[in-house]
Image 1 (tube, rainbow, N blue to C red):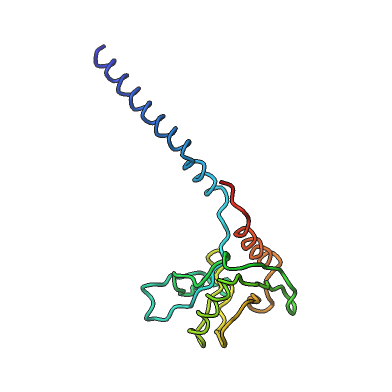
Image 2: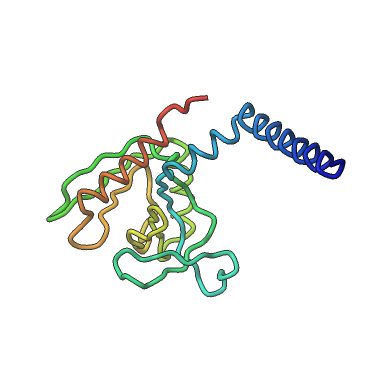
Length: 175
């Protein structure tokens, strides 16, 4: 009987400790934040450079949406992301859609500096872990960008998702 009493007290102590830890996590907001983060992953748009063979150690492979099964090696460090974009809108471009982006002052400066240093190099436009397209930088880019994808252009869903990702980055966050 004494052994059972010790076992019950030990179990009760562990249960109390678990309850305390859960209470601390809930009151600190960590559980709620983790549940919210898992509920809906945030869309992400990034501009990064296609890696050279020498840069393999600082690069990752991402899917090429235009060539199923093909991967493109891009630098891990993005030049900029959707937070560097002031506005975005879907426009018609040829037989498909495109997304017109106007950069923030800081975003325009980052893009101009990066594209000035990397003329004749490929820049990957990555959306949710997939390369939309990777054009060659022919001239420095200033102020605005047109994301067209490859022919026939972006689908309504893709163009809308890019604009939504940019707008969600601009939305005020609840704290």
